[in-house]
Length: 444
Ligand SMILES: [Zn+2]
Image (cartoon, rainbow, N blue to C red; front, side, top):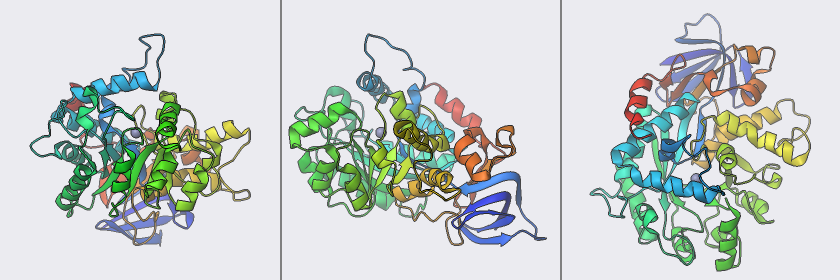
């Protein structure tokens, strides 16, 4: 039994002050008005939020952070970056993937993340040979997340070709499946293996319409037992190629295959077709933007039509260029303003805290829903996944608490976090920080 007493709590019913949050095991069992009762953890000056959720991560990409911020030739774009990413992907042995993933998840945890969706597409040795345990690298990534202490939703990627009609190239052999059954069998094995570990779930991730043939997509729609994520319309070239093959855009192709449901998350969707916003909303699907990576790679902007209305939005760190989930979510609104030439775009008028709450939801509750969670927020009976943000900062002086977190905070304001009631960050630090950084160093 633990009790936590911050200055403010953003509960499922809104912001409340002088509340003690009581935790038993992995669950919130009480939100009590503070009085004379003893408390275990006092957090003066802090705002307690639901744990932040990074919906879209490729953890190994943390290995080349900062090493691609220069231009080797006349042209540098997504595709030249991808060449560098492939070199990194193929250079890391299992130990390196685990160590780098642990570092990536440490960085996320220090930024307040309690749950990560790991879009995992490194399956084999670099020449395509399966490991003795065909799920070896997935186990390594899961072990890294559990070692850091955060929840992980392993989104097992399916990857079948370079692009229509080209087969897998040598640098892609590490990602390849022989068919949809390879992926579905891997998911079944992992679900069994992690059945007793509540911090792990397994979902399906057809990599993209570029890398997965339409016939495979149709077969994959038989998957019912978890969430489905795919990269959708990240780059114009991918959209053109998709039109050339199928006569339609990527989201329409995924929908035709039966994959766009309330369990689906479209990652990026920077170059959608005109009907895509309606398609996503009608299905009750989620859209995961990754603003820092989309800026870093020159992808473009999620269009305004997908930021407004009741689209369920969430965010991902994707390439691990930075770890700042609240900053990513804030960018959804700030880019919306830049695109619209107006202010306070992502919420209905008149509600004093609606914009800040939309940003905070995208970084937490709605991210959790995209990964199959209940999206409950802080309420009695919900899992005790919590993050405390320190508002006792010069930059927060006089700023309303929700707006301070949504519009001003930086990752170093995170002072504490809990995953299923277990502390992960305490006093602004992860207890294994040194060990994790040192063990990753040689692979960076
Ligand atoms: Zn991605």
